[in-house]
Length: 456
Image 1 (spheres, helix red, strand yellow):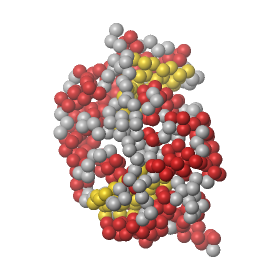
Image 2 (tube, one colour; image 1 turned 90 degrees about the horizontal axis):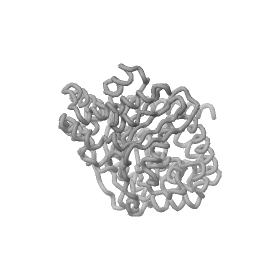
Image 3 (tube, one colour; image 1 turned 45 degrees about the vertical axis):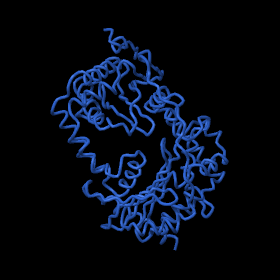
Image 4 (spheres, one colour; image 1 turned 60 degrees about the horizontal axis):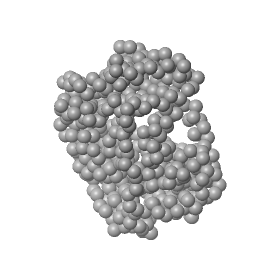
């Protein structure tokens, strides 16, 4: 009997995974999303797709690490992670067995801005899915043994990551750039801060922030709006609370001059991050920045950084630039690894390309290729029901508007060469920048900053 149950669970998991992987989204303009703010404050987004019997649910809750105290960094992430580790109705093992038996998935994860709780089930199992989903959101009990196990897992992961030069460079980059702002901390916290977190802290954080007035629920798949409302009325009827006010965060201050952080490691390669503060996701220049960054370093082999520093000079295997934009701020950075001895030359060429895109118009071909890629790849972000659900939560959380999916193409198409130069001049600042270098500092022998400051 036990072996039969295992076979059934495996079969159902294969069926649901197969269906999910095969679900491709209709053209972006065809998405017809219904939005409503429910009486308890929950924002509900429903997109019906009746071609396959799968339902995906993503719940975003404004309970990210921006709300936790600095001395207990990792609290928000720990709360989210432990949601599925036991409730007043079910043990962690029972939650896992119930969802796995029907081939579904239920998970929760922390984040800087908001946490996510995600459900995937076949249509016939949607009642069980909503029962489990509501249970882990409304009734977690944070058992002491589960807290201890999760803390040990986090500490073990942090210890392992401390051997990764890319992780080290990224951690020090954010810490130096954001200072005491929550964006400067690891979402997981550190070994020291998570040890300060008690079960009472977890219970209090959940009580204060896991409220419907703080939440967005996106439901996508073989289900009607009325069916979703009935499920919410049945399984979330006890969920009440208008939500907390926005966190009190200090203003982010840009760097003055070039700041260098050297981390000595006996490695054959140098890991380098160059960057500064960026923009909020709500910035109206975000689309022009996306086009500009694609040309500079976000476009893979099509980008200027890759063409110059890899293809022409052979200094790196990979190099990219990125604008990461969250609700309260963001950053720009260029990341690459190179031989210790070639770090100076590679750094110099990065500064050269940053300055060039600020002072010379991009070509018509660069502009058209960037637009074509950004528009053409956009549907890939929402190619499955699960991605659509997560995407809808993000669009709502960042206030992009329900028509965002239809408008994205227009936003990108409207970017001109003049826009690219304008945003490059405004949001790229090679004179006030942070440089983090991890590697054998004796062999690296940093000496190019006079060039970076424009003295040579």
